[in-house]
Length: 304
Image (cartoon, rainbow, N blue to C red; front, side):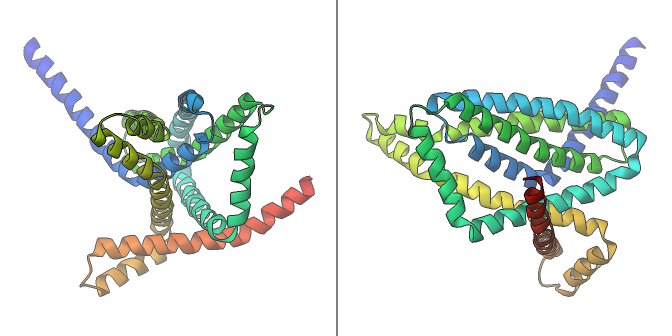
C-alpha cells in the first residue's frame, strides 16, 4: 500500500513537472523575440571595456539581472492573484513597447548613422586615454545594461504570465521561476561566450597548427557578423512578437489577418499570419515613434 502510494505520488510529481515543462516551452517560444534582442543588446552593452574586464562586467550585469527577476516574478504573481484583469492590458502595453523599441532602432540605424558612429568613436577615444576613469566607464555600462535587462525581463515575464494566466497559482510560480532562471543563465552565458569569441579566435590564430590558425581567423571574421545577425534577428522578432500580442488583443485586426490567410490558400496559414503580425507590429511601432519622440524631446527641453 505504501509502495503504491509512493508510486502515485511520484506519478503526480512527474505529471506536474511535465506540465511545467510544456508550459515553459510554450512561454519560451513566445518570448523568443525578446530573448534575441536581450542577447544582442546586452552583448553590445558590455563590449568596449578592456578584455580582462569583460567577464567581470558580464557577471555584474548577470547579478543585476537575477535581482531584476527576483523583483519581477513576485510582482507578476501578485498581479495574477489580486488583479488578474490587468494581465491583458499589461501584455498589450508590453507588445506596444516592443514595437516602439524595434521601430526606434530602425530610425537610429537609418536616420542617425553619423550620430551613432560619433558616439562610438568618442567612447573608443576615451578608452585610449590613461586619465579616463575606467571603473566609472564600467559602472555606467553595467547600470545601462541592468536597466535594459529590467525592461526586457519585464516583457519576458509579462508574456510568460499571459501564457499561463489560466493555470493554477503553483503552476504560474513554477513556470515563471523556471523561465526567469533559464533566461538569465542562458542569455548571460551566451553573452560571455560572444564577448570572448574574438579572444578565442586570436588565441587560435597564433597557434603553430595551420588548422588552428585558419579556425582562429574564421572565428575572428565570424564574431562581428554574429553580433550583427543577432541584432537584426532580434529586431525582426520584436515586431513579430509585439505585433502578435497586439493583433491578438484587437479582434478586428486578428480576424482580418486570418481572413487574408484563408484567402491565400497556396501559402501556409502560419506564414501569412506571422507576416501579418510582423507588418502590423512595424506599423504600430512607426506610429508610436512618430507620436512619442516629439513628446519625449519636448519633455527633455522642459526638464533642462
